[in-house]
Each structure stands twice: as structure tokens, then as C-alpha cells.
Length: 97
Image (cartoon, rainbow, N blue to C red; front, side):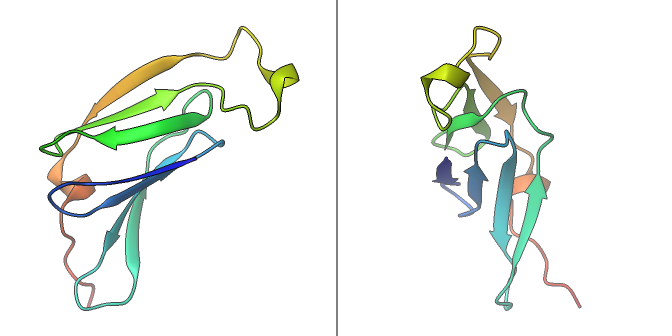
């Protein structure tokens, strides 16, 4: 549902209907990506963003309308969550040998 980029390290975050957020980092000198996944949220992730410094990652847990209005029930949470980013999550990763 959304993609955002870390303003310092260029790490990419992706999220979607499954409630899972992934951080993707390009490994130096390799044409592959390394990734880290969060535990699934209780509902779809509708939007994500890093703050200006990249030390806070915000994401919106909310119904995303992918299944139409009939699937939007009162029990689905609507909230904005903040995650304090660690270098190990968003920083440059060493190339594997």
C-alpha cells in the first residue's frame, strides 16, 4: 500500500494489506537487497513515513478499502504508530562474504 525512503541511508520501507512492514537495504557491492520485517499489525498498514532525521518511523494502521465498504467493520483499529529506528534496522549493512 505504501513505500517510503529513509532520508539519510536510503533504506526503503514497504507495507500493505497484510499488516507487515519491511525495511529493504541494498547491500554494498552486491546486486541484492537485505530486508527486515516487523511483526504483523492487527490491520492493514495504509501509509508510512520517516521523519526528517530518519530516527522516527510513523505508520498508519487502518482499513485500506481493498475489500470494499462491506469489509470495513467497527473492530478494525485506526491509529498512527511511531517506531524509534535503530541503526541496525535502517543503516548500511556490511556485504556478506
